[in-house]
Image (cartoon, rainbow, N blue to C red):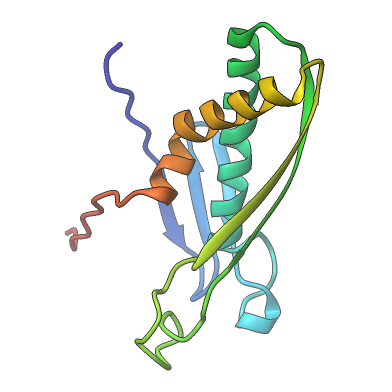
Length: 145
């Protein structure tokens, strides 16, 4: 299979609000009022958790089908902790991103515990978003004209 490439276009509407175009979709990214935004959409790190949930869902269903068991649905609780010091410019001691992310996956499935353990290991190892969060991915920023 050849490589897939995904692309978005983004434009700031204010210091906290960004409009993102992804294919035929428009996403609004904003900060909550407590962080200076207008709370008109999830903030960037909430989208990161949302992207993880979407990827785990897709991979969970795909792998359940491959393993031959019925997966009727998945519920997830995902949370992460980050230190605002670096992104707010107060302290450079901690990293800017999540220090850790915790995921509880509740599959509605016809599978025993051993099968679900193997399923979860495969989901985690094959999910592109989990992979990007767990391993360093080169990111190149440059100023365009």
